[in-house]
Length: 278
Image (cartoon, rainbow, N blue to C red; front, side, top):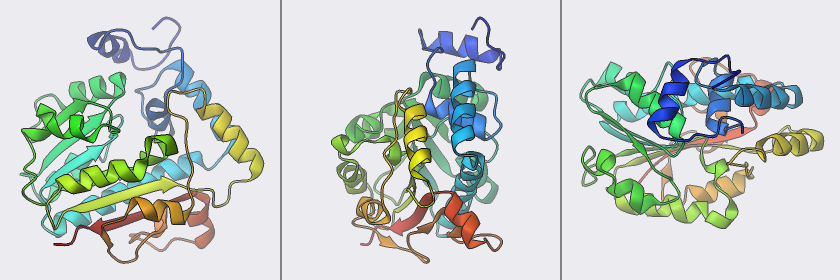
């Protein structure tokens, strides 16, 4: 980690999983930087600052996305959901799924899944032996591998309703990888009464220059982004009955306080929560 000014724990955690490319930016670590975390390397911070110079509202989006996660999890707990599968969970920061769920139900189970070695190592180091919580390193594009992984299969009971979380992750799944098919395979594994919470980037207010510049930054990472229209995002929710208010701009999903329309549009994201009918 020579020359890096980030959290020195990252070097040790990278060693846990062998060689980790710290010279190339990583989307999960950039997101951590937007949220004010310290689980990022110099290359991540440099790329994030380049993106923020192009899209100054990037931090607004990250905060709004985190807010939606909290509201969605609390809603699911209120509906009786006591087990969660968090796909592409990223690097832990304050307000994670297990913290939100355990505040209402200390017995809630949470299985985190991410493919990024530093994200997984950081999560394991932070969570330690937290009861009812696991962290699995796996690629969410392979639902069968995720669902059969010990940290998922041995913790969650898929004969009962599960809260499936796909928060700001499916825009990192390319069209070639057939994201709707991936979601359908997770859906097929879930019992009726299960929920899906989804947020996804969309070109709402982005200018052409912002789109091209933003893609140029993220094309340097291992997970280039694919922005989708509301109609395309709706296809990812096939098979679910959306709860009110349906598929809406990210901050407009059951906000705790009123949100100005222009502020909601600046997040350039849509969100929804759906229930799997019986």
